[in-house]
Every structure is written in structure tokens, then in C-alpha cells.
Image 1: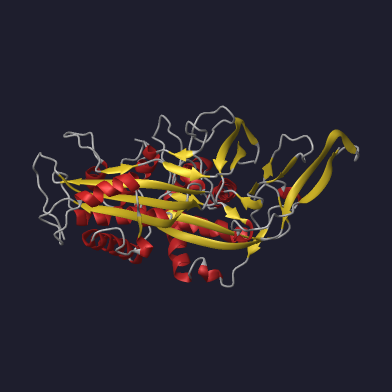
Image 2: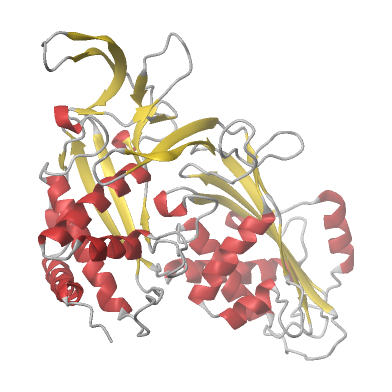
Length: 489
């Protein structure tokens, strides 16, 4: 039953709702801590266990709510410090991760010629995919919060379903596929202290005190009346109904491009080891399964998309600016930095799950040849382990709407919808090159590594003819705009 919203200053508590979310990591997670072991260690608690700070969780949830609903509604649920400061009615706990596997990823920034950029080498700790964890939410609804319980159900259901459907990601490198979680169980307890609004005349005090003592939570998938009052059972069924309605009507804020690919030959995206008996380098793996990181997909696609723009007559500077619009940029004196509206995810060989058997990499020994003498070059012998064959799935998600920053010399708002379609057209052309073997991924491409072919049954499953036509038309319009000379005052 909907509660009446009061503007009184008493702040009387009307209800408390406790939520426990069990989850599993569907991709690696990196929550920035200190840098004692690597350039960026995972954040750990006092016992040395990695965790997700409640502030990070609350920030990700609030950001989604602002884009999905409004800034004003986000302020109601998460609090505000502007004008009349208000405390958040939603309490977000730290996310606890159980028995995690911690590994180290290293990387280096490359220029357009695939040469390393000076001082751009880094390494960082990550929590590998498959780790299980839990987090807790508590909604304390008072009579002066400016919204009622029914509205809170809509908001919180939207947040939980978006978290489960990967519209909300956590931690660092979200645009490169990190921080995906999937709910495995949702447990709740709800206590209504507003007797006027209670549908059943039952006191919640005794039940609430018992809950504080034993912490018993009710699994929403197995709702039954044992151990809870009839009034609470009715309330939990209402919460379950709100969640099911949101899941049924869920509409992602992203357009998704899914490209099944088959690796033709070997793949070499280097990961180094400090062990003396180990090869000089091997293809990167996650939980003993070969992967193509989101950063590798991004680097290859960005390089090809920029080249396509230049071949269409756009100069190098404008092509680079366009890449910054698509893939994000750091802050500069000319304009503020912003995160990419595109998400490119990490791909696992054969879409491996946790039960996958350990993959056997192929060991190869090579030596560098002196181009003048034709003989082996001194001290240039090296070994590597490379991944061969298998299928990978490239997943790209693009925001359906996005506010691009204004350029310093252009005060007009960009036509967001058409601009995003044009960018999608660029992805289409680059993906077509990837599927046809004209775009290689990873290292040692000069000796045939990193070649992929399309592994799907129907290419229209990636881009329908209508979508292709609309996106390429928008791209053509964008290219014409970029080719216009800058008019000086």
C-alpha cells in the first residue's frame, strides 16, 4: 500500500528494508588500492582480503540512477550536500569477496605504429573472474524523505536488475570490460513500523528485535511464511513483484554488438613471468584460459577506425579527435576529459567457464636473424608460449544516448543520436576487416599471428541490413562534416 509523503521535520522511521546480494564476478575486477606490489594493487581490508568499498558501490549505483531517472531523484535516494543537506536513506555496505584469485596484468601504451610509448609501462593486480562475494543494502524510509515505499521499490529494483544485467560496472577499466557481476541470490527482510499503513494489524517490534539477534534473511526465490509475520511475507512478495516487473521490462542503456570469431593460427598477447624456468613470455591467460583483453580489442579497432577516417579524407588531427570522442580522453587545457561511451569486453577462449580444463599452450623457440649476414644474432634467442585456435566472442556495447563535451572552438551541442550512429558505422567497417582477416590483433602480426575469421552462421546477426544502411549513412554525413575546413574569424 502506498504511503503518504510527509514534509514534517520529525523524521519518524516508517520502515526498514534489508537486502543481501550474493554475486559472482563475470569479468576481472580492479579496485584501486596502494602500489606496494604493483603500480596499482587491489584494495584490501585489515586482514589482507580484497573488497569493494561501499563508496565505490554507491557511486556506481548513483551514476546509473542519475542517467536512468534524474539528478533530483538520485539526490532523494543517495542524499545531497547542496542547499538543505540530506542523509542518504540507502545505506550501502562494502562488497566482500570470498576466496579470490589475485593475478597481475601488465601492459604498455602503444602509438599508431605499434611502438611503445616512453614511460607508459605499468602493471596492476586484479581479482580474476569467477570469485564469489556479497554486499548488503539497507533502506531506512522516514516520513520526511520526500518519496514513498512504492517509489523506492521502483528505484532499487531498477538498480539491482541493472547490476545483474551489466548496465552497472564496478571499479577501474570499466570501459575495457572489467567489473561485471551477476546476482546469484537475493535475500531480504522488510519491517513496516507505520501501523496506520500496515495492511495487517501486526506489531513488527518483536520480529525486528529477533532479526537483529539472529540476522535471518529470506531468499526471495524461496519465499515462505516460516519465521516471519504474515505482514512481512506480504511486503516481501510486493518487493519480489517489483523486481520481476523491472526484469521483464528491462531496457538496457546500451546497444550491443556481438561478433563470434574463430582464431586462425596463433595468438600472441604477451604476459611476462619473473620465474627463471619460465619462457621469456607467453600469451595472456585468465584462470588457465587464453583471453583477448578489452584493451587489445580496443587498440586494434581504434587504430583501424582512425585509418578508415583518414582514407575517407579526414586529416590526422581531426581523426584523432574523433577517436577521443569514441574511446574517451584525459583532461587537457582545451577541454575536460571524459569516459568512453563504449564498452569493449574481454573475450575468453571458447567462452570458457570456471569448470574449463587447463589449456595447453604451444612452446616455440625462435632467434632473431641478422638481416645483413643471414645468421643468428648474438644473445637474441627467446622462447614463447602461444595460444592456437579456438573461438572468441567480441562484445561491444555502445551508449544509446550520451552527452559529448563541447569542443573549445564549438559552442553548439553535438547531434548525439546521429553522431553515435556514425561511430557505430565506423565499428561496422573495422569489424568487417577483422572478420575478413585484414585486421590482426595482438603482437607478432608480421608473422601471421592474431588472424580471425567470422564464426557465426549469419552475418546479419551482427548488423542487420537496415542498421548497416543507417549507420553507414550517418558515418558518411559525419565524414563530410569533419572534412569541412575550419572557418577562421
